[in-house]
Image (tube, rainbow, N blue to C red):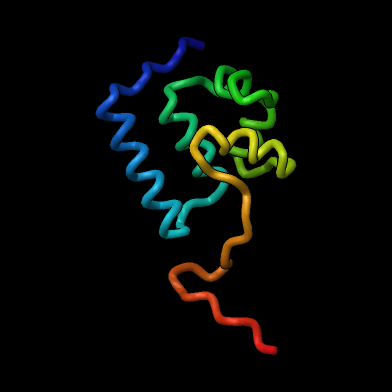
Length: 101
């Protein structure tokens, strides 16, 4: 399979802006985020996996939504983009309600 064509600097910047906007809004799933991160780099699944120190299968399964990656694997992948795994609200676009106590 031929290597994908890397996006230009302007395309990478546009992809990054869109990626971080969706992250901030909380409307991006882990499979979508994985694919977006990889597309920003212009790398194949195998190349991206090698770069992040995980197997190609981990990347492939996450992108398909069938994987069960460890927190360490996700953090290793996301670190490049200044992200880490955390707790997020299941309800989107709603402010989190304070715990009753």
